Image 1 (cartoon, rainbow, N blue to C red):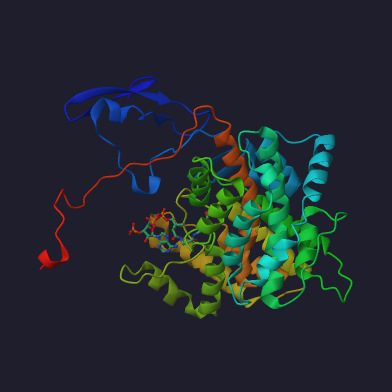
Image 2: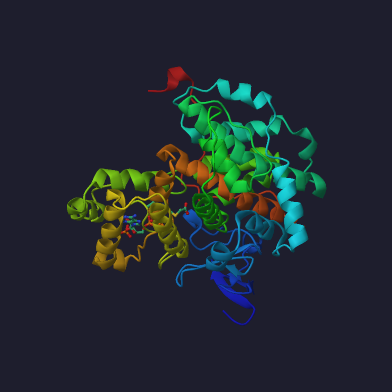
Length: 430
Ligand code: CMC
């Protein structure tokens, strides 16, 4: 590598490749002309060395355990900010003034109701459907209801679609929960803040007065901030790829919800809590740690390890503090799951295998305990992640659409299948 370019010798051809620096973090070697110059592709399954796009939204230093939204450390945003302020920051690039914040909050709040026919759409699901299945379908179904915000070439329509999704996905999430327990849907209330409104839509019943607990509302709001964006992770890349074809914005976000569902991604918080329940008591921890280390056993410690963080996930520290705040507020003195989690974390952090592979607790390790204590069933955990990540997906989708160099995403492949052969009729096949 030399200054702003690097030299690659491939197949006896020497090519100069431009090197582009970021404001912080690794530079990239621009290989976009590589195929034209050498006839070769690069190969990077899982994208471990590939920057798929240029972005100004979120920065992660996985070795140092740093996460910045638009340059602001996650710790400061979680301590001092609120979720809608974070949404504004991710979407517009700057923290809002008081007037901008009031206007933004007003606009999001006025979009929280969903089209009444969505209620009938819900009735088609089995009651025991996983709420993420309902989310994939109902977020996708928004594309069938809001035709006046689907012209992606119009900045105003893009913004209306963005507001609608930030505002309506919490309503759909609460409806998915209510549907699963057979309770009536609770309509949003405009005098409540974003997260209090969501808690009320989940836990209020028409027969009783519901008072939002401000400590729980603040804790959940912080959890939403922690999950709001995480640069080019699997679901965000899915949204970008879906959006790169010019697809309907609601459908693109539904694609993100689908990708998030997997246990290696957003589904890990559900899996982590199930694992803690299965371990049950601290004396069984060594058994499970040994299972996780065993190459012949597919078991992994859920809530441990991360593709990017090779240090403590900064979100996990804030989450651990939030867990204690919530349990204190609810008067839960001895939570057996928390005991198992704390001991498991300490045990693993001293173990050679986890140290050597740089496997630390990630955000999902403590989030399940917190959400369970708040009253959410395990099946709702990934739904809450999707609710919070919606703004990140939208900010990344908008950034891509507004980039003049944007083109459809079209990866290539290393083909290792059969070479050309002739068709045989069924009678000719042995
Ligand atoms: N328990 C035991 N071993 C592990 C774990 C784990 N949780 N995670 C990674 N390893 C081992 C893995 O077996 C491999 O060992 P070896 O090099 O001997 O083959 C090595 O560590 C590297 O693992 P990898 O799968 O190649 O790493 P990756 O970057 O592809 O995977 C991960 C990252 C998050 C999918 C993985 O660590 C994992 O499956 N963790 C558990 C699931 C989890 O908590 N996911 C939430 C991620 S944070 C929320 C989000 O971003 O969605």
